[in-house]
Image (cartoon, rainbow, N blue to C red; front, side):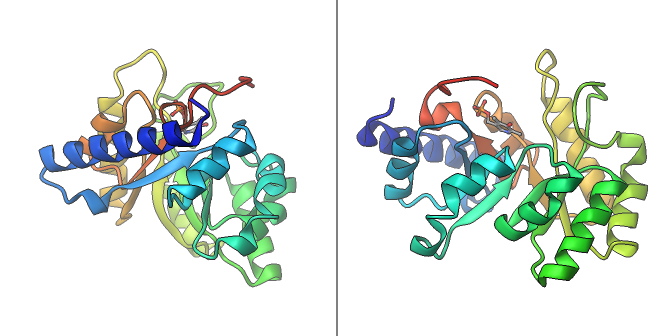
Amino acid sequence: MSAPSDISAARAAILERISLAAAAAGRAPETVTLTAVCKQQPDERVEAMLATGQRVFGENRVQEAHGRWLPRRGRYQDLQLRLIGPLQSNKAAEAVALFDVIESLDREKLAAAVADAVQKQGRAPDILVQVNTGEEPQKSGIAPGEVDAFIAAARSTYDLPVSGLMCIPPVDEAPAMHFALLAKIAARNGLATLSMGMSDDFETAVRFGATHVRIGSALFGARPVDR
Ligand SMILES: *Cc1c(COP(=O)(O)O)cnc(C)c1O
């Protein structure tokens, strides 16, 4: 699926499915943004995606994103880069410098590091809080029971522009209840952005209110290496 025409057709098909899912939920298609998750994809596929007009991209590693996007930033003024992977505190400054949105804020130490970088750089990416809706020990994200207090602290103590939530449901469970939980937490905290839904479950996510769906393999084809 690496030929440019295939990429273009894959994107058109996904956008169509997003539209249909939105319509079925009584939502306008433009209330759902497609984030093209290009982690580990070869540059030629990313170039083909850029050629379709796609401008919102998701990356899960700061270093990889840096190498890919720093040289391209100047060419695409309307690019929007979203960090969807876990972030280490010692990479916070680099992430604040590169990304327009950080979707993986999930602990106080990281909030402090991001806030510090925002102050030093005078640049404030939009922030989403990642919620570990399945309470999986190996997964990033804050536990549902701690999220309200964490959002309040991120806003008041660290003055971060928290605008929404992100989740990755457990692979072996039906995603709907996780999407519903995320939507409920967002509603009670007055948050408008819901980043949820991937290649296999984005239509369900749209039904539960996703404003951003993060799609990788269904758009670009399988990732060459899985790390
Ligand atoms: C890789 C990744 C995706 C995309 O996954 P696909 O199944 O390839 O669509 C979405 N969100 C996050 C956080 C990811 O790491």
